[in-house]
Length: 156
Image (spheres, one colour):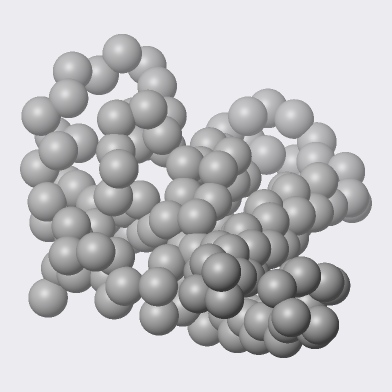
């Protein structure tokens, strides 16, 4: 219990179900499938890249609207002095043990927000979903590059 598979044994504090990711790292053992197919000796050309959408990721996130705290995360939050910040702000700056799934499983509903006092447009989630997709693709590309570099180093 308390561990996120592929999380390096460090445990988790917060698991975002719906959020605005600011930084993302693909975890080992996640659902991403990366294939590196070298062509022509040592040179590494364009690679076939395939990613399934069930990746576990370590994140730095803001604007959380759905999350789960571990018992350790609850203790950490209770120990903080409240300064008017939302929960995600506390964990964004202080927590190395924040995780999520890609794609996020909860999005905010467009329309009136009583907590923020604003009317959310129909495209409210578009920028958040685009940023999440872009960050995830970057994670997969970094994994492919690391594999290609390991393969190339083995050929030298």
